[in-house]
Image (cartoon, rainbow, N blue to C red; front, top):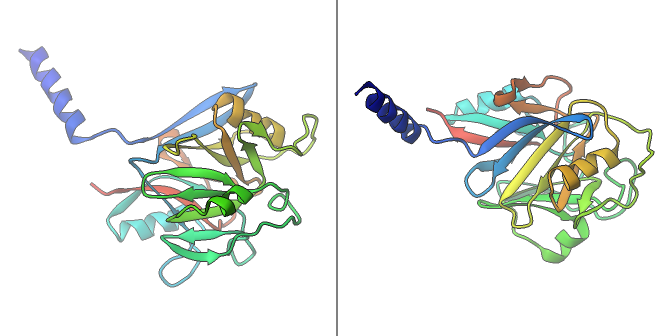
Amino acid sequence: MLRACLALAALLASVAAPASAVTCRNVEFESIRYAVCEVDATKEDLRLFRADAEGRPIGQFSRLEAILAQKGETLAFAMNAGMYHEDRAPVGYYVEDGKEEMRVISSPGPGNFGLLPNGVLCITDTRARVYETRDFLAAKPACRDATQSGPMLVIGGELHPRFLPDSTSRYIRNGVGTSKDGKRAVFAISQSVVTFHEFGRFFRDGLKLPNALFLDGNVSRLYAPELGRNDLGRRMGPIVAVTEKAD
């Protein structure tokens, strides 16, 4: 009888509290450790956030938590989501909740963003896809939220052509890759300094994702309660996050 009651209690608990479709874990690939958070874009509310209702940049995960709390929501996962200017306005294409704040930048330029090809993370209500910028302009997908960054890490299963296996440029880096069908968005941040070539190989060979986009290196931050991560540091520009209704 006791065994039956315990089994029933476990069943009721699983029904009352369905598992989140965001899963975070620490993994190791080629002797380098990464924190990885995978989002089921068909189920989870994956969105971009940059400024509050008064237009002030949010900047920190704690401020985003406070803004969400006022709407009866909680933060399940978050990461910095692209490069920005000193005023924390986005460098490239940026759309939030259907409103375009910055146009697509397709020309080469300085820094990592201008190391073409760069790309766009496009989010809809049921999909998330990383596009190389030229493909994005040709396809013209309807994105509810979108952020442009660069360089691309993986393009159609191939590493960015300008990545060097023997590069000496090493930083903590973060990025995002998506499955071909757009159902899975996988966010990763290195736990030690890595080259672009190493980071790209992780997305291509470790995570088996056909397209992946670099988000930043000087500002790489993660909010992942599963991993005990709520990173502090420099104020961010765009933030990508999964939100849930508060209990």
